[in-house]
Length: 246
Image 1 (spheres, rainbow, N blue to C red):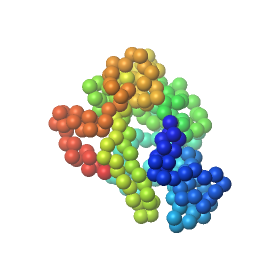
Image 2 (image 1 turned 120 degrees about the vertical axis):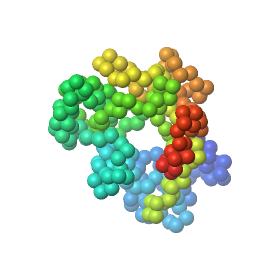
Image 3 (image 1 turned 45 degrees about the horizontal axis):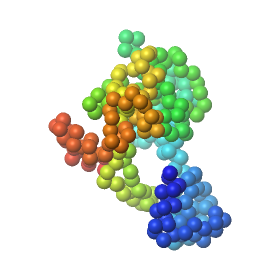
């Protein structure tokens, strides 16, 4: 679908496709990473859809490492995400933390593949002793009491266009998506932790859930404007939230 939309957009704009070997093109589009060698050889009139080394923020393990570095420098600015451990490198550090938590209120952890997207490979554990070292996985402390919409978990997809890294130039789209879980949220326990339709909001998984308690017209998602109106109805300061997002 994405390739179709890209082709449709460029054809509508008057572009035509050239062979992959033709580096005189105006726009170089690649769904994977583009090497620094290619970027450094671009002419002033040429544009590319990826910045080199974006894996530093698109891969969860590298993102977690970079986040920790920044939080050590400016902790007041980088205090909005749970701690991330890389299982292959920091298992002992994580295990020491997990085993130190109160036994009457142990932490819940979520394990995610470092490089995959959507819900593939994600697991939730209520017993930290069940987690073993694994390559290409990260682990985070699960937020057990998240903010809910009518009892459902949600996350936000907010779209930005980055046209320059130095200086940083970012354009924020004025709308987005609110992705909903398809079942009402429950605090994880040994029984419901395996039911990811309670705990995850990925559209690719929840769109096929026949037990969808939050039946919407567009699958398991709403427009961002819906969330803002919901928050206003709950007497939250939406203007402040929008400024913080920006």
